[in-house]
Structure formats: C-alpha cells, structure tokens
Length: 515
Image (cartoon, rainbow, N blue to C red):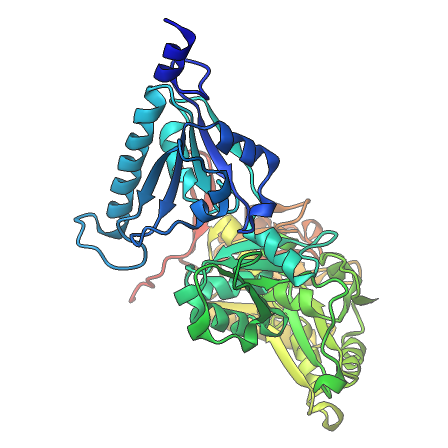
C-alpha cells in the first residue's frame, strides 16, 4: 500500500491502525485564550466534533472557528434535550445516556477508520465538560489525550481582578443545581467559592448566599472573556437577566474590605460557637462560617488552638476560670463594631460559654448587642456514638463539679435521676483538685442500680488520645477518671452486648417495659 493510500485509510493525523481521540479544552470563550497545544491538535485532526443544543449553534465551535478548515469532517453532537422535559421512557437522564452512547458510537466509526478526532470543549474538558461523557465511553478503547483549558473559574477571578484563594484558604466549586439547603451549608463553611450553572437556578443560589450570611461578599460574572461580558455584585443582579454561562464568586477573604460602623454597622455581634469534643471533623458548616467571618476570636486557649489561624483575625486567649470576664470582653469588642466569635468546647449551651455570655449580655449595658448561639456536638453525644446508643431513651445530664453548686445539690439530683431510672451523662467528673466526687457518685448510684450496670468512660473522644471503655458500675475506678473524661451510666434497661465481630456495644432500648 502506498503512503497516500495508507493516509486515506487511516487519516492524516493517525499514527496507527486506529485513530487517536483528543479532548480539546478551548478556554472560557476568548479565542486568544486557547492554548498553543489546542490550536495544534485542531489543525492536525481529521474530525472536529462539538456539542450543541437543538438550535444548532455551538459555543465550542464558535471559539475555535478560525482554526476549522473546509476539509475538516465536522460532527455536530446535538443534545436531544437541555432543560426541557422529555417523553423518553428513561426520563431526562435516560435520554441523555442514550444520546451519549449514540454520539460515542459515531466518533468510534471515525476512530476505527484511523481518523484523528478532536472533541472541542469550552473551558477544560474534564471540568463540568460535555467531553467527559465521550472520554468515559472511548478512552479505554482508543489512544487518548486531554488538552487542558482555562476554566471559567479562573477567567471569572481574572475579570473581577481579585484573588480567589490565598494562603491556606479553601476553594469550593459548587453547581447551582444543588438543593438550596446544601448550597447554604457549603457556602457557610468555606472560605472562597464559585457557583456554576446559574440561569434558572439563580433565585435559589441568591437565597443560599443570603441565608449563609455571604451575600454582601458575593460577586457576579457573566460570559467571562466573551462578547456580552458583565460583572457586578451578586446582590444587585436581576434574576431575569442571568444566563446559564454565568458564575457567582466568593473571593478570598484575606485583605478583603470588611463592613465598618461607617458602612452602617454601629455595633458588631457576638456569636458563641461550639467546636465539638475535638478537632475540625466535629465542626458544623454554620460554625465554620462564623469562625471564618469573625474579626476576633475569644476563648479558653485550649479551644482556640482548635481553630485555624487566619490572617487579619485577632485571637484573645485566656484561662479556663474567667468565663464572666471573657464574656464581658467579647461584648465590649462587639460594642466597638467588631464581629466576635466566643469559642467553646462541645456545645456552648451545655456546661459551657453560652450561659456565661448571655448572663453578661442581659445587663443593661449590653442589651443592644446582638448575641447568637450556634450548637456543637456535645461530649455526651460523641461518647455515646462511639459506644453505641446508650442515650437511646430518656436521660439526664449532670455536672459533678461542685465549683458552681454545692455537692449536696449534686447528690440530690443523682438520687432523683437514679430513682427515675434515667441514663445519666456525668460531665466534669474529676480534676486535679477534685478527686473524690466520682467515688461518692458511684457509691450513691449503687444504692439504686445493679453492680452490673454498664458505665461508659469516654476520654478525649475525637482527639489523639481517645479512649472509650465500658465497665461495671461496681468496678468504676475514680483513679481512671479525669477532667477530659465523660461518664455515661446506664439505666436498668441498658444492654452491653459483644457482637460476632468482637465489637462491644452499649445501647438502651427505645421501649420501656410497662410494669
């Protein structure tokens, strides 16, 4: 076979018996932002394929138009549906899956004939791109290369002229098609974000920004680098004017301008947040957002150390025994227009800082300052989850610390809970200066509970020194209990079971016997 005959069979850009597949990223819209490699591959390809809606116009083709030759074989992959409904028996997803299979089969004919196929993709081929559906169906059968492109995320940040992420900030990319509550949670928890696929999703996306407290930071970019480009504040954008090719951007918070009293914020606010029993895995999205948005962090130094250091934030650590002073300091900062997060361990409303802050905030001097309390995972729930479900029925939460109430009151409450046959979560059981309370509590409970009653000892749950054990009430040793330990004492119904895999679980039935 002569060389010309071989080229006719295999395709001018092919180097073997089958052709080569390329996914070609074209960048965000401006042809000048196409890479040299993308231009090269289009020029060498035998077949140029591109997706389009049923109107036949392809944005991808328009970007690359100047590089498409008259002798290129063009394959227009026309979607059967975009956002409208369909009578396909498999629904919208079924219609698209069938389309992708048919489109891949069309490209496979060219590849089997030895032709090189370049599938054009706006932005980057593997970033929310249509090309990826061809890639998944063909890349395991044919020699394939993906040519990366500039994404709309990078283009939007460039057109806004503002940093997207800096230092240790986290960038979250979100599709606007997510449920509104999910969007809200993720926007509250992240540093920076880009929300894609706007258009008809814009009203819900805007509500999510507002509900997460991030609307004032959000920017809007439409058709970045393309004709008709528009930028502005998301809050000022008319929902009826938003196309699909638009994104919402939360830029970097580092060195970003923050609201000041002159901008309408005469006073700040205090948000009391719970960090859970240990590190970042136990934070809620709402708490993450409040910590990131704060100008000042106030708290016991041990708990402040759990919070990442952020440029521009002031951290005010103190000893664990100055709750009222700490609360007053936080409220004074807020009175000067600062956004203050008071950091508490566990849940701030369970033997923690929420009460201390609200007690001071109830004084006349501070009643005009906004105070919010955000929940956290408390130690009892964390330890119970590790052990199984010992809090599966009614339970009482009691602190064994006699620093703020006399031991006689504690003993009376222990007797009442024991007499009522409640499971008990015992906080603050012991410390270096309080060594006898656990023994006293054990002896008192043995007057009402069986010696075999399960007792869960959860120490440093979620932390590096985590230990969760279950002992009999009669065998509870005060020497094994310290301030970092929580005790869960079972009721008469609590079960301790060793499963077939060797795991021991403790659980309290939901149904209590009628007798």
